[in-house]
Length: 137
Image (cartoon, rainbow, N blue to C red; front, side, top):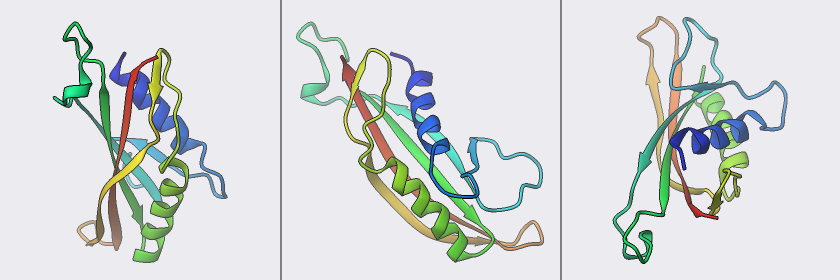
């Protein structure tokens, strides 16, 4: 099990979002000066200490990846549109990670769009958090 294998599954799923134009997905780093609308994804591996997260031998088996999606647009409606496309491909999706059995992706938290004019133009950023969990196949 690797963090990167889980991250690759999430990023591939996001990049497969239907619609035109294509959903622009950045893995944690936005290049200089892109035009909104896009999603910036931050991934954080978490190991729960739950009674059912360990094998009989005591080894950790459950893997949890938190997916922080910053849906960015030039206005609140654009940020919501990106967030809706993200939700449409991630929520309840059962992703494929080699050697793992994944549960459906769940929505964990969200924040309303935040206004940012620090660059001289309006940018709205809406954050949604999703969770991908897996165990050995």
